[in-house]
Length: 174
Image (cartoon, rainbow, N blue to C red; front, side, top):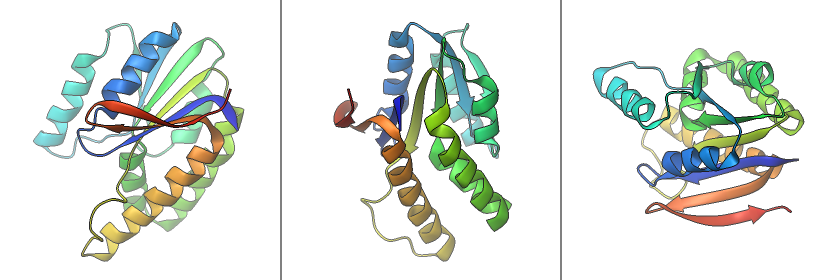
């Protein structure tokens, strides 16, 4: 387990990214954002731009649409706070990349997470409270993200669930 790692869960527009950004600011460390989104259309490009506009200009951004573990390993340092936003988009990217990529990248992240130095903030969607999706890929996404969230939570010292912009601390290992 990595006591300095925190998983931040929530639904769409729950405030999870804003909370993670506040945690990063409060860390007092140099902040590096690991962004997993791909701007596949104009609406997604606007979402990405809104996230960038909220962040201080001195924060460094790294793009990691698939190779998240390798990016974390390359960027992590004792004097840094890494903010990963978000695991849900990363899982979606990997499921579209194929089974081999998904399996390898998931395993690499789970192996790497407990060893990373510095503060690690991982944002992810909580998708388990909605209806069971109607198509196989959407069901697979919900299943895989739920299983990943459980595995990441087990490796993090702190887990927060956001609803209406308010955090509920689910786990806090001293």
